[in-house]
Image (cartoon, rainbow, N blue to C red; front, side, top):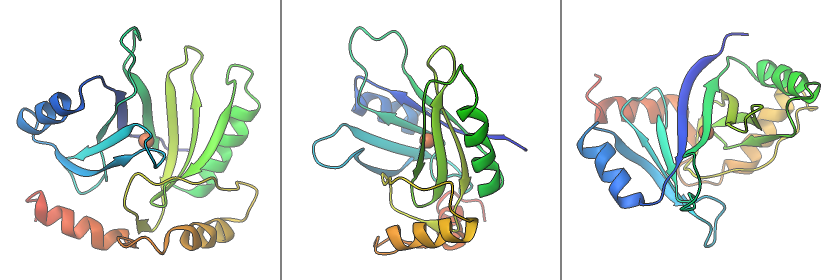
Length: 179
Ligand SMILES: [Fe+2]
């Protein structure tokens, strides 16, 4: 299984200051923002500087004053749904992993868990589609890959931004001056 770096999500105290800093100093652009679980849940802001990733860094406003770490999770991309399923099986049998949760953002099929020191990890593969973020629903890793994709499509195809990922990336490539 080939695992490659994708993004990290940090818990922040002052969203505006953090977003402006990453815009002004590092040149990232806000890709999406919204309540992470809908309603009045904490805001998440996704930022990217590349068409290859919807976000390369994201901030979620959930860092209590006393919390020592700002890491929510590091995310790593794998190449297929089969790889994500294999990782789910692996962590399910690992006593050092207390819990794991399969989640789909529409644009990805993920599993979330924590390392032995409680640092969050996301392992995901891309789906064929772009979906406006934040978005999240459970998915069933016991389904066939085909059924998993049909289920994701059914869950997210009503999103107004739902489209083939190639279309989204082509738009972003222009925005970022890659083409
Ligand atoms: Fe993530």
